[in-house]
Structures are given as C-alpha cells and as structure tokens.
Amino acid sequence: MPNPSVLLPDRPGVPPMAALPEAEELDVEALRAAVGRGEVDLVCVIGPTASGKTRYSVNLARLLAPAHILSADSRQVYRGMDIGTGKDLCEYGEIPHHLIDIVPAGAKYNIYQYQADFAREWAAVRAMGAVPILCGGSGLYIEAACRAYRFEKDNGVPASELPRRPFFIGTLVSREERVRRIDRRLDERLGQGMVEEIRGLLETVPAEDLMYYGLEYKFVTQYVLGQLSYEDMKVLLGNAIHQFAKRQMT
Image 1 (cartoon, rainbow, N blue to C red):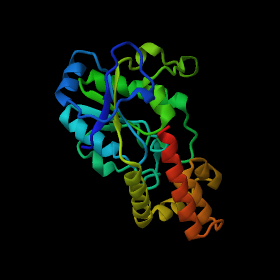
Image 2: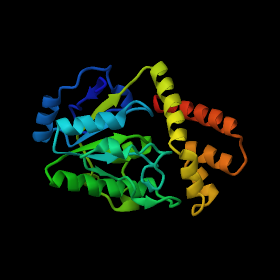
Image 3: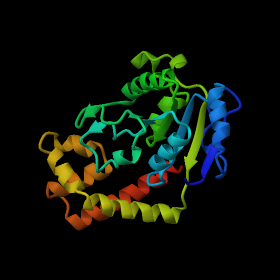
Image 4: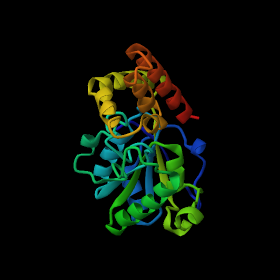
C-alpha cells in the first residue's frame, strides 16, 4: 500500500479536505477498533486520478474484512463505459463493490440520484456488519456521500441517513510520478481498445451524450467522428487528463 494521509475527526461533522495532514502510516488495527466502537461509520479513500485509489481500497478492504467498496466515480456508474473510465473490475477480486454499472451509457444520472443510491447501499453494507469503504473519485460525489451537502428536498434522503463520522485516507504520489502514471495509463487504455469501445458505444449513444462525459469520451469521440487526427486526439486528451488531476489537488 502507498502511505496514506489520515484524519479521524474528533468532533461531529467533517473537516475540509485541505485539513488532511502529511502522509503517515495508517494504523489498521486502530481504525478497525474505531469502526467497532462506532467512532467511524465510513472509510473514505480519496485522491487524484492515477494515485492508486482502487488498489489501496481493495488492499484495505482485505485488512478490514468483512468490507465492501462503494464507488464515488461519476462515470463508472455507466454500463459499457469500462476502459475509458478505468473501472479495473478485476482489481476488486473477491471484494464486493457497489455503485458501478448501475445505469446505461447515455443516461442522465445526477448528484441527487447518486446520494440516494449511496445512502441505500451504505446502509445495506452496515446492516451486514461489514465496513463500508468509499473510493473516489469525483469531488461532488464524495461531498454528497460524506460532507455537509444534503439534498433531502430533491431526493428524500434525510441527513440522518448519511454518514456522520467519516475517516479520510488520501492516496498521494509526487507530481512527477502522477505525470508518468497518467501518460502510461493513457497508452495502456488505447492499447486495450478504448477507441473500439467508444466506437461501439456510438452505435447506440448519441455523440453529444458521450462527449458530455468529458475527457476520454469527448476526445476519442471527436477522433472517431473525424474531427481530430489520432495524434491530436492523444495530445489533447493527455493534456486534459493532466489538467483534471491538477484541479483535483486544489
């Protein structure tokens, strides 16, 4: 596991993300005990793209077993959008995972729906006696799951049905390592058939709907439609992913 940044709130509510301390070793047994005492009701693994969140979450779930992973990725909810979103489903192995592949590609899924779906799955995992681990991802989805953003009037989810005592773990890598990982991962996804995946999606999903999802689905769709050359697509997409990762750190 990479070294995490950790924070256990000592008061009700959740501190701002910027309050996370410098990286330090996670005491898994202390975390397990805190969960058992009810001092932690959700473990949140957060970090920028290509920082190893999924692998970290899976390893942590094995250490905290029984544990389930709940995704906080705004694009992994869509079925058929696999390579471009980096679902890495094989990485989960025997660990149960939730909120992935729950709506068809092209559907309009929003933050209100996500919060309601998360609340239901989170409650179900806790009812099983398992540890819920949130892995993300998308900033608004993380906030909807475990911060002060409540959408009760829009989705009927009262604040009492959402986590109140989350524990944050930030997966961090150096800027140089993040750049290398993003570049390597883009090459891997193109080699794994990302263009073919998106070409297939375009048979049933309107191009404007795919481009709405951004990043891979925007630029590769433009390439498939003949609006960009392969070289331009790859450069523009790489730049956009790097900019996205930089924004995630602020």
